Image (cartoon, rainbow, N blue to C red; front, side, top):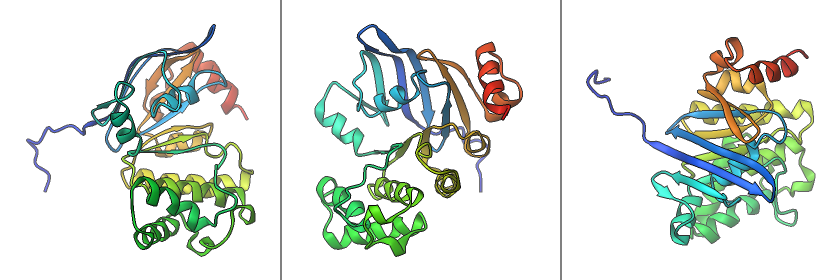
Length: 254
Protein backbone atom coordinates (compact mmCIF):
# COMPACT_ATOMS: atom_id res chain seq x y z
CA UNK A 1 0.00 0.00 0.00
CA UNK A 2 1.30 3.47 -0.93
CA UNK A 3 1.90 5.77 2.01
CA UNK A 4 0.43 9.19 1.09
CA UNK A 5 2.83 10.87 3.51
CA UNK A 6 5.92 9.32 1.92
CA UNK A 7 7.58 12.16 0.03
CA UNK A 8 10.87 10.41 -0.64
CA UNK A 9 12.12 11.32 -4.08
CA UNK A 10 14.04 8.81 -6.19
CA UNK A 11 17.74 9.43 -5.64
CA UNK A 12 19.96 11.23 -8.14
CA UNK A 13 21.79 8.64 -10.24
CA UNK A 14 23.56 11.12 -12.53
CA UNK A 15 24.41 14.74 -11.74
CA UNK A 16 26.27 16.86 -14.30
CA UNK A 17 27.46 20.33 -13.30
CA UNK A 18 28.83 22.94 -15.73
CA UNK A 19 30.29 20.35 -18.09
CA UNK A 20 32.64 21.66 -20.79
CA UNK A 21 34.57 19.66 -23.36
CA UNK A 22 36.89 21.33 -25.86
CA UNK A 23 38.96 19.73 -28.62
CA UNK A 24 41.42 22.51 -29.42
CA UNK A 25 39.24 25.33 -30.75
CA UNK A 26 36.18 23.10 -31.12
CA UNK A 27 33.78 23.51 -28.20
CA UNK A 28 31.86 20.23 -28.10
CA UNK A 29 30.15 20.95 -24.76
CA UNK A 30 29.50 24.46 -23.50
CA UNK A 31 28.23 24.18 -19.94
CA UNK A 32 25.85 21.22 -19.63
CA UNK A 33 23.84 20.77 -16.43
CA UNK A 34 21.69 17.69 -15.92
CA UNK A 35 20.20 15.56 -13.14
CA UNK A 36 18.85 12.06 -13.83
CA UNK A 37 16.73 10.41 -11.14
CA UNK A 38 16.75 6.67 -10.44
CA UNK A 39 14.52 4.73 -12.84
CA UNK A 40 14.11 7.56 -15.34
CA UNK A 41 14.57 7.20 -19.09
CA UNK A 42 16.19 10.25 -20.71
CA UNK A 43 16.30 10.50 -24.50
CA UNK A 44 18.77 12.95 -26.06
CA UNK A 45 18.10 14.26 -29.56
CA UNK A 46 19.64 16.94 -31.74
CA UNK A 47 21.55 17.49 -34.98
CA UNK A 48 24.91 15.88 -35.73
CA UNK A 49 27.74 17.67 -33.96
CA UNK A 50 25.51 19.04 -31.21
CA UNK A 51 27.46 17.31 -28.42
CA UNK A 52 25.07 14.43 -27.68
CA UNK A 53 27.59 11.58 -27.90
CA UNK A 54 30.33 13.65 -26.27
CA UNK A 55 28.08 14.28 -23.27
CA UNK A 56 27.25 10.58 -23.05
CA UNK A 57 30.91 9.57 -23.20
CA UNK A 58 31.75 12.08 -20.46
CA UNK A 59 29.26 10.35 -18.16
CA UNK A 60 31.69 7.46 -17.62
CA UNK A 61 34.86 9.40 -18.50
CA UNK A 62 35.45 7.68 -21.82
CA UNK A 63 35.99 11.34 -22.65
CA UNK A 64 37.62 13.38 -19.91
CA UNK A 65 35.80 16.71 -19.49
CA UNK A 66 37.75 19.93 -19.93
CA UNK A 67 35.98 21.22 -16.82
CA UNK A 68 32.89 20.55 -14.75
CA UNK A 69 31.71 17.66 -12.59
CA UNK A 70 30.06 14.30 -13.24
CA UNK A 71 28.58 12.40 -10.29
CA UNK A 72 27.41 8.79 -10.66
CA UNK A 73 25.24 7.60 -7.77
CA UNK A 74 27.04 9.90 -5.34
CA UNK A 75 30.58 9.29 -6.64
CA UNK A 76 32.48 12.18 -8.21
CA UNK A 77 34.35 11.02 -11.30
CA UNK A 78 37.87 12.11 -12.14
CA UNK A 79 39.49 12.96 -8.82
CA UNK A 80 40.17 9.44 -7.67
CA UNK A 81 41.01 6.43 -9.86
CA UNK A 82 39.35 4.03 -7.40
CA UNK A 83 36.09 6.03 -7.41
CA UNK A 84 36.20 6.24 -11.21
CA UNK A 85 36.60 2.48 -11.60
CA UNK A 86 33.90 1.86 -9.00
CA UNK A 87 31.47 4.18 -10.80
CA UNK A 88 32.29 2.70 -14.20
CA UNK A 89 31.32 -0.77 -13.05
CA UNK A 90 27.84 0.62 -12.33
CA UNK A 91 27.40 2.05 -15.83
CA UNK A 92 26.71 -0.11 -18.88
CA UNK A 93 27.29 1.41 -22.32
CA UNK A 94 26.02 0.29 -25.71
CA UNK A 95 27.56 1.87 -28.80
CA UNK A 96 26.53 2.30 -32.45
CA UNK A 97 28.95 -0.47 -33.38
CA UNK A 98 28.64 -3.59 -31.33
CA UNK A 99 32.31 -3.97 -30.30
CA UNK A 100 31.99 -7.73 -29.87
CA UNK A 101 35.09 -9.94 -29.92
CA UNK A 102 34.84 -11.76 -33.28
CA UNK A 103 37.00 -14.69 -32.12
CA UNK A 104 34.75 -15.41 -29.10
CA UNK A 105 31.30 -17.03 -29.10
CA UNK A 106 28.26 -15.06 -27.97
CA UNK A 107 28.42 -16.74 -24.55
CA UNK A 108 32.13 -15.97 -24.19
CA UNK A 109 31.49 -12.33 -25.16
CA UNK A 110 28.90 -12.04 -22.38
CA UNK A 111 30.97 -13.84 -19.70
CA UNK A 112 34.48 -12.42 -20.18
CA UNK A 113 34.01 -9.07 -18.40
CA UNK A 114 32.00 -10.72 -15.64
CA UNK A 115 34.97 -12.97 -14.83
CA UNK A 116 37.66 -10.30 -15.21
CA UNK A 117 35.91 -7.27 -13.66
CA UNK A 118 33.33 -8.81 -11.32
CA UNK A 119 35.51 -11.80 -10.37
CA UNK A 120 32.74 -14.32 -10.99
CA UNK A 121 33.36 -18.03 -11.46
CA UNK A 122 32.83 -19.55 -14.90
CA UNK A 123 29.59 -21.25 -13.78
CA UNK A 124 28.15 -18.11 -12.21
CA UNK A 125 29.10 -15.96 -15.21
CA UNK A 126 27.58 -18.52 -17.60
CA UNK A 127 24.34 -18.67 -15.61
CA UNK A 128 24.01 -14.88 -15.61
CA UNK A 129 24.94 -14.67 -19.31
CA UNK A 130 22.24 -17.16 -20.29
CA UNK A 131 19.63 -15.27 -18.26
CA UNK A 132 20.54 -12.04 -20.04
CA UNK A 133 20.59 -13.68 -23.49
CA UNK A 134 17.12 -14.97 -22.71
CA UNK A 135 16.12 -11.48 -21.60
CA UNK A 136 17.12 -10.05 -25.00
CA UNK A 137 15.50 -12.95 -26.87
CA UNK A 138 18.47 -14.90 -28.27
CA UNK A 139 19.49 -17.68 -25.83
CA UNK A 140 19.76 -20.12 -28.74
CA UNK A 141 22.67 -18.06 -30.17
CA UNK A 142 24.98 -18.71 -27.18
CA UNK A 143 27.46 -20.86 -29.12
CA UNK A 144 27.37 -18.81 -32.33
CA UNK A 145 30.15 -16.41 -33.35
CA UNK A 146 29.30 -12.71 -33.95
CA UNK A 147 30.03 -12.89 -37.71
CA UNK A 148 27.14 -15.36 -38.05
CA UNK A 149 24.63 -12.98 -36.46
CA UNK A 150 22.56 -10.19 -37.98
CA UNK A 151 23.30 -6.63 -36.90
CA UNK A 152 20.21 -6.59 -34.69
CA UNK A 153 21.27 -9.81 -33.00
CA UNK A 154 24.81 -8.50 -32.45
CA UNK A 155 23.42 -5.36 -30.81
CA UNK A 156 21.23 -7.48 -28.55
CA UNK A 157 24.33 -9.46 -27.52
CA UNK A 158 26.05 -6.14 -26.72
CA UNK A 159 23.07 -5.16 -24.54
CA UNK A 160 23.11 -8.56 -22.80
CA UNK A 161 26.85 -8.15 -22.17
CA UNK A 162 26.24 -4.81 -20.45
CA UNK A 163 23.28 -6.12 -18.44
CA UNK A 164 25.30 -9.11 -17.22
CA UNK A 165 27.45 -6.68 -15.25
CA UNK A 166 24.37 -5.62 -13.22
CA UNK A 167 24.70 -1.93 -13.97
CA UNK A 168 22.64 0.70 -12.18
CA UNK A 169 22.63 2.88 -15.30
CA UNK A 170 22.57 2.08 -19.02
CA UNK A 171 23.90 4.51 -21.64
CA UNK A 172 22.96 4.02 -25.29
CA UNK A 173 24.84 5.92 -28.01
CA UNK A 174 22.67 5.71 -31.15
CA UNK A 175 22.31 1.93 -30.75
CA UNK A 176 20.21 1.51 -33.90
CA UNK A 177 21.98 3.85 -36.33
CA UNK A 178 24.18 1.10 -37.83
CA UNK A 179 21.25 -1.29 -38.31
CA UNK A 180 19.09 -2.08 -41.31
CA UNK A 181 15.54 -0.74 -40.87
CA UNK A 182 13.99 -4.17 -40.28
CA UNK A 183 16.42 -4.83 -37.41
CA UNK A 184 15.81 -1.57 -35.55
CA UNK A 185 12.54 -2.69 -33.93
CA UNK A 186 14.06 -5.77 -32.29
CA UNK A 187 16.67 -3.62 -30.51
CA UNK A 188 14.17 -0.90 -29.56
CA UNK A 189 11.85 -3.57 -28.13
CA UNK A 190 14.64 -4.74 -25.79
CA UNK A 191 15.24 -1.12 -24.73
CA UNK A 192 11.51 -0.59 -24.16
CA UNK A 193 11.41 -3.66 -21.92
CA UNK A 194 14.36 -2.30 -19.92
CA UNK A 195 12.56 1.03 -19.52
CA UNK A 196 9.44 -0.74 -18.25
CA UNK A 197 11.57 -2.69 -15.75
CA UNK A 198 12.77 0.60 -14.22
CA UNK A 199 16.34 0.74 -15.53
CA UNK A 200 17.88 4.23 -15.36
CA UNK A 201 18.74 5.02 -18.99
CA UNK A 202 20.22 7.82 -21.07
CA UNK A 203 19.74 7.23 -24.80
CA UNK A 204 21.12 9.26 -27.68
CA UNK A 205 18.90 8.33 -30.61
CA UNK A 206 17.19 9.52 -33.79
CA UNK A 207 14.24 7.19 -33.13
CA UNK A 208 11.42 9.62 -32.34
CA UNK A 209 8.94 6.78 -31.80
CA UNK A 210 11.14 5.47 -28.98
CA UNK A 211 11.37 8.97 -27.50
CA UNK A 212 7.57 9.25 -27.52
CA UNK A 213 6.87 5.83 -26.05
CA UNK A 214 9.73 5.24 -23.59
CA UNK A 215 11.16 8.57 -22.44
CA UNK A 216 10.28 10.25 -19.17
CA UNK A 217 12.24 13.31 -20.29
CA UNK A 218 13.68 14.47 -23.63
CA UNK A 219 16.72 16.72 -24.07
CA UNK A 220 17.23 18.65 -27.28
CA UNK A 221 20.89 19.59 -27.70
CA UNK A 222 22.51 22.04 -30.10
CA UNK A 223 25.98 23.59 -30.19
CA UNK A 224 27.09 21.85 -27.00
CA UNK A 225 24.14 22.98 -24.89
CA UNK A 226 20.85 21.54 -23.68
CA UNK A 227 18.50 23.91 -25.50
CA UNK A 228 15.28 22.32 -24.27
CA UNK A 229 14.57 19.80 -21.47
CA UNK A 230 10.98 18.66 -21.28
CA UNK A 231 8.56 15.73 -21.49
CA UNK A 232 7.96 13.87 -24.77
CA UNK A 233 4.50 15.44 -24.93
CA UNK A 234 5.96 18.90 -24.35
CA UNK A 235 8.65 18.42 -26.97
CA UNK A 236 6.49 17.05 -29.76
CA UNK A 237 3.34 19.07 -29.08
CA UNK A 238 4.58 22.33 -27.64
CA UNK A 239 8.32 22.96 -28.16
CA UNK A 240 9.34 26.31 -26.68
CA UNK A 241 12.57 27.12 -28.50
CA UNK A 242 12.76 28.12 -32.16
CA UNK A 243 15.80 25.90 -32.71
CA UNK A 244 13.83 22.90 -31.41
CA UNK A 245 10.86 23.71 -33.65
CA UNK A 246 13.13 23.94 -36.70
CA UNK A 247 14.85 20.61 -35.93
CA UNK A 248 11.55 18.80 -35.36
CA UNK A 249 10.01 20.26 -38.53
CA UNK A 250 12.94 18.87 -40.52
CA UNK A 251 12.90 15.36 -39.07
CA UNK A 252 9.15 14.87 -38.66
CA UNK A 253 8.15 15.99 -42.12
CA UNK A 254 9.18 12.64 -43.62
